[in-house]
Length: 475
Image (cartoon, rainbow, N blue to C red; front, side, top):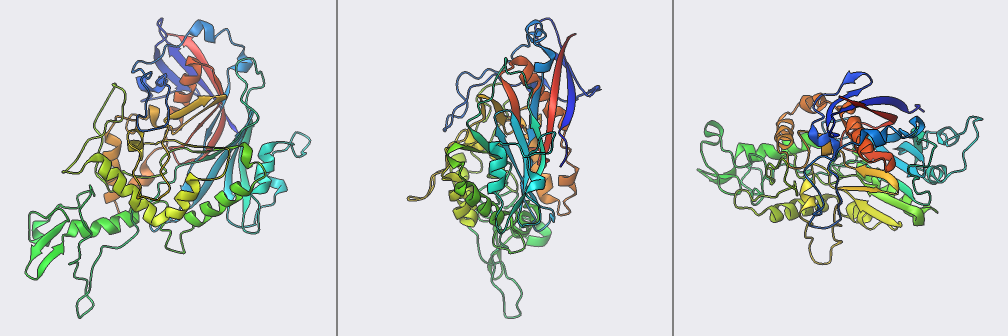
């Protein structure tokens, strides 16, 4: 078990309370940007996404008021819950991270799909090495079964002085991180000739916004245009162009969750078992389960259906592409995801716990503006929220201060397609996690308004737990 990290964040502000510089652990933080101080926002679930109270201006930091707070109070717990997914075709590693918060205690955990870990070694203990009587330990114990155990990666106790804010102690928050559920797991549709050679004369229907699906190659396809289905005319009839064919293999290579139809890839099976254990827990009437966004993935291998928007709320602005309505695009790929993982998604959307909350991330940011339409009789997709900042806890997906992936920015989507085209996996592995940046975003939010003791995010795919100490200085 790893002890929680500790980090000091120095925030420099001018006379108006505007942040002009951020240093973390005595080093400058680059690209934290003006957005890093965060929108002072009030959000609600549903198609309207952002509420009208969101402002494009950063809230000022009242340095005088902040510096009257006792040093012992100028601290909060920061938890990045990591990711749940893998292995997959091109990514052999797996992650089964989840987080638990109750009161001032926070636990960063890993679900282990076997019984290899001892229960007593993965519970919170006091200085005398005795088991702490706490709902987090009760929940961890309930996740042990004849096919599972839990790795308690780290745990923390938020600052002990409750005069600023006291996190609500009745609720047991369970956090599920990024999933990036796939929309496709198949090969390009085809038949074979008498010699067993694929003919690729079968259409997969309209391109529906697939990345470069209709881009014909004059040398390979002997054509310069395709129809809306990525098909080109040939001597023996229509056939799928090379880019349309390769889309399927590129998607399978880029998938990081894992094909649920392949027994080698167990992310879906493990999540299904995890949800069953949560639903069977004696604490289920106290559990508030939160999925932190990027559950669906409408980016990888798909065109961008959002426009650039730098400062005018709502930041997520949908746009139609290539004759396809944005809502139709979202509905289609949501339902494609459900064709692969429908029972699992339905179980998550209807889990019998006290409260369920679903956020949007950057890869499913369209859900800020549109709730997908499911076929009649299907379990509906719940509305998504941007954030939750109540009862002494603040959680969000975490893209807010990411200049390439924040709501309203389209450059992150463009880079995602470079990752899609890269069959080696190198570009994905080269993406920096920018820990200091995201900690600084949370620290500035705390300095603006000290109404939380625990901050939780996803987005980076790398689990991390720390105590953060923000300090504010004049410019």
